[in-house]
Length: 44
Image: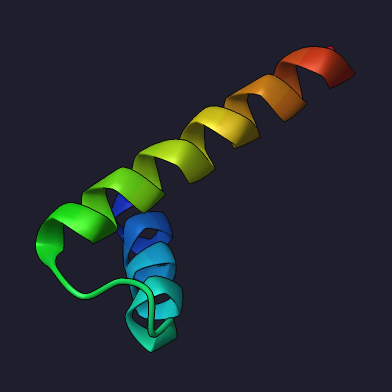
């Protein structure tokens, strides 16, 4: 379940010119998941 989600995020970030290293991917993915969590928390 989560493997496909992370793959989708990675594919999107890989196309973004601002993400050049693995560390950039980890940072951006962390923010995306955190913001998704906050969004879901507000809806509940």
